[in-house]
Image 1 (cartoon, one colour):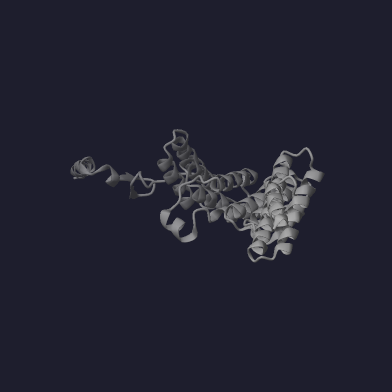
Image 2 (tube, helix red, strand yellow):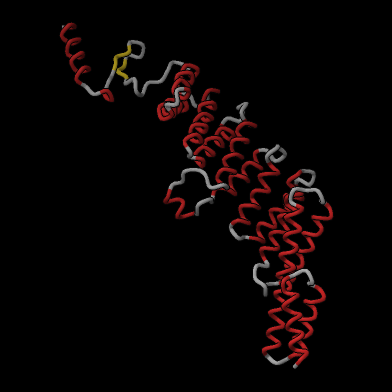
Length: 313
């Protein structure tokens, strides 16, 4: 009878597809499917999972790491499993998923020795997202925007290690992200926070330049808030005075020239308005101001020609 049962089982196993392969285990007195089985210890399971990771069989590695977390959630190896899942997702380009896996290590396994390493990984993820890298769920991208996660990732880096090596750069890059989105006042606030919270770092100096640049961008049109334009000029000049040898100093000088052009253009537009209204004396005042105060701009020559024409009338 036992021999007959053995034959029947053998036939069943031979004919069954691989995903339905089951084995009898005397230790547990149960039928088990090796596909879903877990090793006897978390150490063995982690070692087994990492064999797939090392051979770049990432889907298999993810599955085996998940088994470890599910069956041994309180083991120290579970923290390692979470960490490696983050590493794999990052390698696959799923940066937001990787960030979340890394964060779960810090939140669920505070004893992990990889805290500093994880913060570095998270900072790198934020930087790569800022640069446009990473695979995104198209539905989520439509709802919340392409790089919605960037700010939260950098803020998390700061919360995880407020005095760590990446915190000043993370704060600075929040400002860069907002600036790129055209949110210049919000960007300015973040750059000011960089200067206030991390005054003795290289990022504070860079933030000072970016504050001036944000104000310059706010004064985008020739007739738009010239007080902001003047503030930006003063900020750039202050940056040049305090950091004459900085990498951004020449950029600051170029920005001053561009903003002076913008101011001169604004005055020229006003002068032309008065001229068209036949208020010639008022027009002369503005043209004269351009000639006197903005000699190094392209508008000075144009204003001088206008003055000469008006004086002949």
